[in-house]
Image (tube, rainbow, N blue to C red):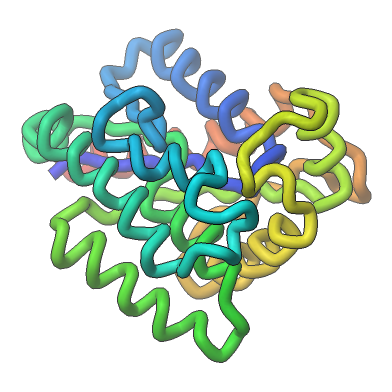
Length: 224
């Protein structure tokens, strides 16, 4: 089997920027890899997830059950894995993903009260990893940006536009708090993107990520 590295974070944390920078670093280092960005907007398998994010099933994230919403996003991942990169991964390839099963962990579990979180995660991991057969990540980076900073960055980027997740500041705060708990229990690598409330530069954050990616790749090379 190959390796799967995931870039995760609440909206406004800079995932897409860091994902693009990591992909470019792979190319600079001449390391073979493939990538996937979820949801795959425009693809048939992502249509229902897009409808949800556009507010067609409810104007607020909490209007849709976390179980129902999770299925919508999981179907898109399943289609991507089966049709695009399963063979590559099973032959030992390196996959980079911008969002993954981890996004359901952050955004859907964030809808639930603390006492319902554990049963939901047990169901989710069984559904996506065991029932659907999606591979478990080798390494997950959670880009942690303070709520006020991430929401301000979102506002500057898109004004009043955005999906139902991005518009709901209270919901994004809940998602971040959920993610910080998961980082500890699931072994995700938390990247502090704004020590003392001041955002680090793209290259400073990338440096933290790259050191850990390099360790994983070197360790994998030794096992061959």
